Image (cartoon, rainbow, N blue to C red; front, side, top):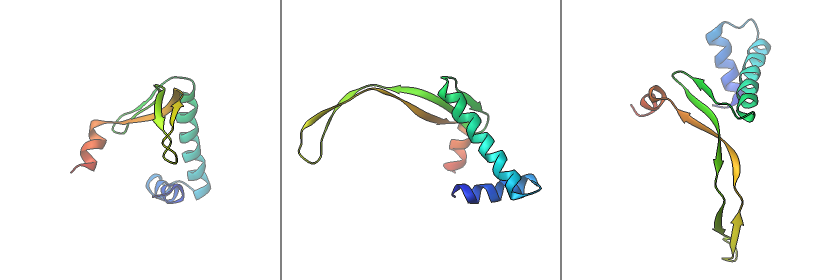
Length: 92
């Protein structure tokens, strides 16, 4: 499902007056999550999971083209941990 499909399904399930209104709601939802996580806070949504910022340690990797070792610096990444209910729904 892509974003367009998601907006259409969201509009149907919420009785949004227009697809534009549904699109705005979805955009606001995404903006709130991304903005909050970008400030270092986590977003917990029951039945779905936790959106968070996690530090990924630096490491030594190998360039596949020439086999040369390359240092990959540490960095912050956006992470999602699914809730038990979401995991169970996928695994049934």
